[in-house]
Length: 456
Image (cartoon, rainbow, N blue to C red; front, side, top):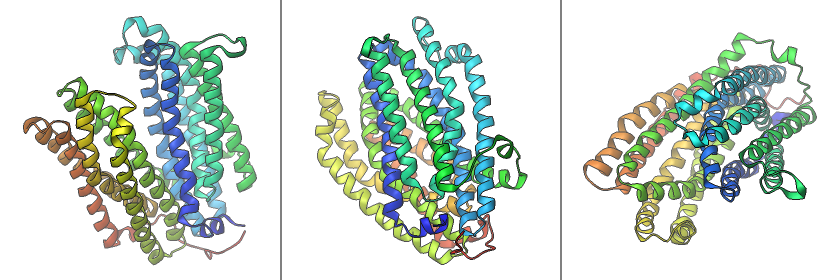
């Protein structure tokens, strides 16, 4: 069965549910790592914090090639140009490997300076340095793995990519248990053990993904082919990937600024936001997974020249996404007090979180609206408009409204989060207007040269 028919033969649910589990495991594993090492010492958790931030920033950097290559691959597959799609896979892997190598070397040799720049307390410097230098070793395999997984998903093999994530997480968690707690007589290695487990897990993931690329796509990756770059292919990848990375980076910086506003409200409000955000992430996962699934389907459709089908595919996905989000938010609102009770018994934190849960009834549908439409626009090649709108709305609406309502008018944490509500709905409705205008039809990256149902 060709890769095009793999995608065409699957429903949105079949494509999306492995993506949801994949994303959920990434969030859950990070939480479990922190939970496990917290049993060693809170100093160890603090030492991990800087290294994890560097790791997260690196993932954002690597993701721009993964996101860009995924869209380009789906469009070439939809257009029936399977040979070019294979070249995109090869060049994306090679290009991201070079980026991963550069970042890994930078972190490895600049780790002392990084820790000083991040104001790591002196008594944690040694522990933090050990963790950061070991974790740098997994940045190269992580960069390669991101592109391999994105390529598998672009071909419609979302389930296989999910299985790899499951295995990687199991290897990492098992390694944590062995090296943190000294099972079977092994040494207790504290943060170094967590770092080594992460590296081993990523290496196992790369090996499995390379095997799957060969088995499912029939593609053997040779480094000479991966490093033989085409300026046209790299330009198309960057045309999608750079705005997407810029949008993610803008969101992260916006979150840092707004968190600084929350800090003015005191430590209890900082703790409330932290607890509430962790719970909100799992509601967001529904929208993100549906957005990614829709992106894959629309990429194939626009590549095949089926623009009307692509237009209506977004409308159907949006309806499904909003229904699922509203139902999940109601569940969270009803169970919110019990969920927060797992973290704290503080009456002020619980009362404030209750107001935030009610606000999420308005926030989360807007966020889902935004995520799904932006993913669809990106799939057509229209990535710059969402990026420009993100800069305008995040910095011109979200931050000013958060400060005005939360700090100036004294509404507190709920007022701060009103900034997110206005931002998500303004951007979501603007993105929907863009989709309805059909201006994205002029942004398609690939012109069809073969029948979309061509078997190969």
